Amino acid sequence: MYDQTKIIDALAFAAHRHKNQTRKGADKIPYINHPVKVAKLLSDFGEDDPDLIISALLHDVVEDTTKNEEEIRETSNIILEKFGENVLLTVLEVSDNKNLPVEERKRLQIVHTPLLSDRAKKLKIADKICNILDIKNDPPENWPLQRKLSYLDWSKQVANGAKGLNKKLDHYFVQVYNEVYTLLKNS
Image (cartoon, rainbow, N blue to C red; front, side, top):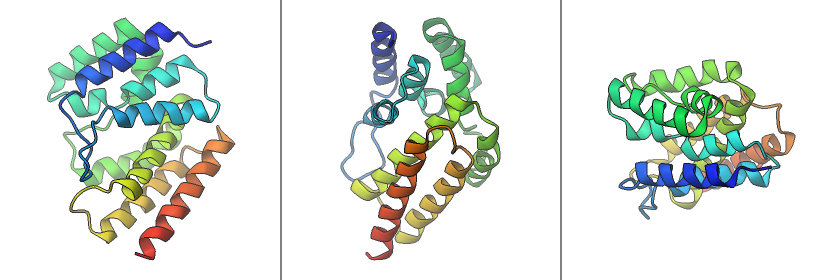
């Protein structure tokens, strides 16, 4: 059974932390919509672990709202105190080290994903599905076709390291990937 209060608290915390952020697309959609979509997708595909849903809501807080090690520590402590160790560990597992170059972060995601916890793997797949759907529905501004296709291929490599825990979610990833890939190739 969901702990509704903790889920609402996580949503409020994430909304506060992402309050001035928008997605990369032309529509400038509020960033908070992304973690909400990831959490909803997991729920829609039968995931009812409250720590997973809370982690989905918070999954970009450390990576995208902190600027230095001190802020990462402070944010991590807040997550630990409010939402528990399982949530903190999951959020940290899926957070990139922004001090590394983009290509290295992408490489590490491919390498590390098979080693993640089950929660983090499910979260990774859901996150990649939502990001691919965003490329279809509100693509990042100034991304040429090749960059979009490269993102899809990289996402597939990451998702391949996370599959096997929720067959319906795995199948949906393949469906979304194929649909968006075909759409882009025919554009």
